[in-house]
Image 1 (tube, rainbow, N blue to C red):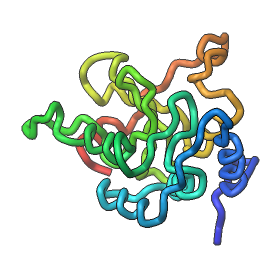
Image 2 (spheres, rainbow, N blue to C red):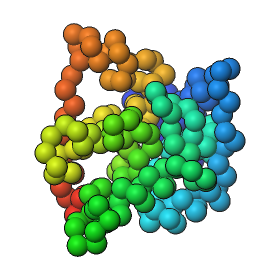
Image 3 (cartoon, one colour):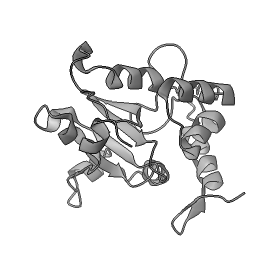
Length: 194
């Protein structure tokens, strides 16, 4: 079996061990991990598969409750989950079937940053880039609300582990802070093409 690697550093196995160790916070109990049947049910509901690393996070670390700031949504279950957030966002815009979708096809919201902003994984791209969905940044055109947060889910997790993510106050306000780049696939994916 071929293992994916983060350029020059580690395998996903090592990354998952470090994420699990970092996620175990004595002040917060993690929920139990999701099962493979939960992943299969989520994929059935979503209509697309999960990247292997994302599925492993949910089945080997916990069903949400860890990660940057407000933590990952549970994948599936009661209350607000990644699948329910996707259903709410990907459904007809403003509840109107005559409007085009306002959420890109194949993109799964995994974390709510607050103020209607999400971290979301592009489940159709082999590297599973993490996107920042920021609808407060400009006009109402949803194609202008998607930004590239990280080139891969693995790199995004590495930035959480190392404290170098844009969401860290020192990074956000530091001299090396960078403006997010627009996600070039937004318009095409909003039309539902993969």
